[in-house]
Image 1 (tube, rainbow, N blue to C red):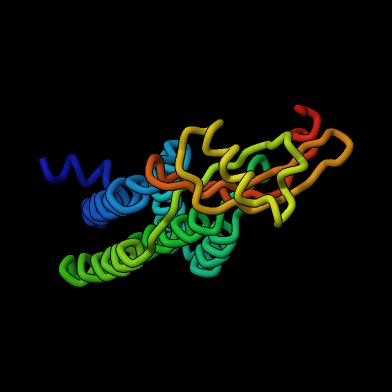
Image 2 (tube, rainbow, N blue to C red):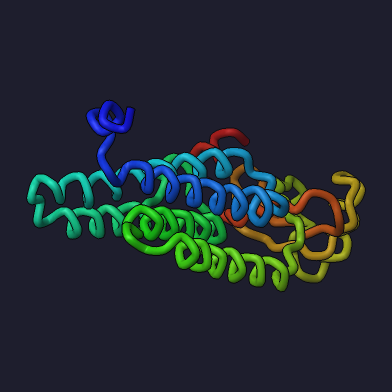
Length: 220
């Protein structure tokens, strides 16, 4: 039976699957228990999990499979891919700094787990757990206040001296306790302004975009 399996699988494939399992479980914990509980962004949940698996396989096959083919530049290719993906920006929608940080962590763990051939499982787990602990510690001490972007139409209230009136109007229309209001882009032609409203309680999704895109301007 072992001889039959050896015809289909390379000797290190079982170890690779074990490291993949570690990578998936650690990634899931970081995304599901640390990131998603605050952000509630299903789109990034989907992205982070699949990118982690994809990067793991790319690095593994480029470094270790090509090594059997005397691919002397395989390590350089793997590191180059790591650099490309770590600075990747989605052109369809800008990614907030917090999400970019999580993306970098996910990619880094996938690369570490993929190239950890010969590393004892205990050491590999400890390395992953150190990263998990660091993320947990940062999230635990980070007090995130929920905020919303609002396209606002009462331009007379956006001046600093009428800020309390602006808060009262937003509280009445949004139904939340407003803590802070930041005025972003202003369109005097259409009498619209982009506000970031920081409020008390509720959902913790924070949107950091403070500019009106061309498509947003056309929607007014």
